[in-house]
Structures are given as C-alpha cells and as structure tokens.
Length: 122
Image 1 (cartoon, rainbow, N blue to C red):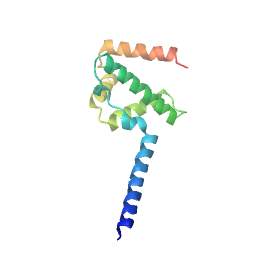
Image 2: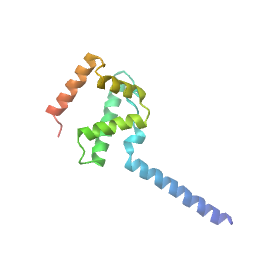
Image 3: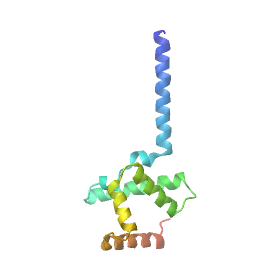
Image 4: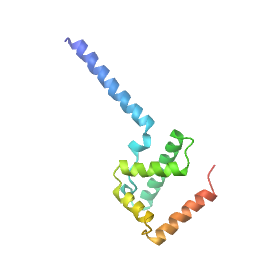
C-alpha cells in the first residue's frame, strides 16, 4: 500500500472517530460532562458549581425530551447516577425512599420542591 493511500485511510478513520464522538457529545452532553453530586466541593463555590451543573443538565434533558415531565426527569437523573456510579447519591436516595433520611435534610428538600412547584420560572 502506498503512503498516500495509507494516509487517506488514516484520515478517514480519524474523521469517523471524531464524527462519532461529536455526535455522542451533541446527543448526550450532560451525561458526558456532568459529575456526581458528591464530586463538587462543599463550600459556596462547590454548591454554586453543582447548582449550575444541575441547571444545565436539566435544561439539556428537557431540550432533548420536550414532552417530559418531572417524573421523567427524576427517572433520568436516577439513571444518570447509576450510569456514572454515583454511589453516595444512590445510597441517600435509597435511605430517603425507605424513610431513613435525615429529617432536617428532607424538610429542606421538601421546601425546595414546593417552592419550585408553586413559583415556576418562566
């Protein structure tokens, strides 16, 4: 095989790999770029970064699934935790589901959910 043919084959292979990667990033941006909740810092900057990432993930989800509801969002977020091995988040979820979560934390979560439901953003 001549050097030109080999270079062309390598260029085509590289183009295919880059195209597949770009397609995956376009179709699933949050699943590639987001982190588990416990990967963020616990200071104000980490909390702000986590909230911004969650907001982006949520926007990406509803852009990709315009007819989805909050239950669909919840299932997708849970699946994100499973797919990304977010064991601490999954453990907290199971504790909350079993009624064993910290009551103060659940009170704060419940308040946030109620606030979002009663004061949705446009």
